[in-house]
Amino acid sequence: MISAEWIYWLLGAFLFVSGVQIALDPHHKKRWTNAAFWCLFGASMCYGSFVPKAPAWLLGLAVIAMACLAGFGFTGADRVHTSSDDEREAHAARKKHWLFVPALTIPAVTIFVSVAGGKIDIHGKPLLAAGSATLVGLGIATIVALLVGWLVLRPPHLGVALTEGRRLFESIGWATLLPQMLATLGLLFAQAGVGTQVGTIVHDILPGHSRVLAVIIYALGMACFTIVMGNAFAAFPIMTAAVGWPVLVQQMGAHPAPLFAIAMLSGFCGTLCTPMAANFNLVPPALLEMRDKYGQIKVQIPTAIALLIVNIVFLLVFPFL
Image (cartoon, rainbow, N blue to C red):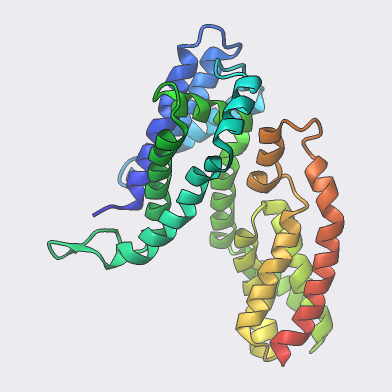
């Protein structure tokens, strides 16, 4: 049975190899600290699947060490010996649209494995672990896309994928950790009962049966919590437990499906405005080597405000039809 842990182990092994590559690079300016950061990250990916059977405090120490390395500036990208810009442009001109084939392979294989993989049994046992079809499908799709990339692009040697992967990870830097950190933060907020406390505060200040004010608080709360936490999925359980379900659904009779769908869109308005949403707002500028790493957020803010206003209007109308 293939489980999600296999994907984490594979990713952890890749990160660990990237760290070893950096350690073996005598020209890297932050050779040992950078290598330690990526090796710890890779080891955490592998070790985390054994918690809580294995001691969790070791994982906590690794996270603290990585935070210190990144926070005190001991990490950073350096020049990786790879192809030049001219060579890449010439290669891209030769391959043209074939360059998109490996990228398009990933969603196609992911969908196929997600849909068909769960129906395959081997000796009476399912091929994929329950609840992991999509994640395992994404991992398998990545491996297939790598093989397709080798066949289509014909790199000079098989180690190009590792070298380019290391270069991309170093370009992204510590922001690679943020999605995992933000997911953990959302779990901590939920376990700490933040949603219940926010609901108590809202109930105290909300005038009775004011649908307009309740909707505005729900939408703005989704956007603001997302700005703080960087992830609308982390903000959703808090604001829905506080306002969405008890006030708008149970007291005012809103239909849950359109209410929660539009609420998520309100949260994504906050995603456009925050550097905490690293995979949306920090990683692309790093990959594109933009001079202003917050330039993308500055451009997106007017759109986010306009969309949030539209979402509030939709929340006042569609869930109550």
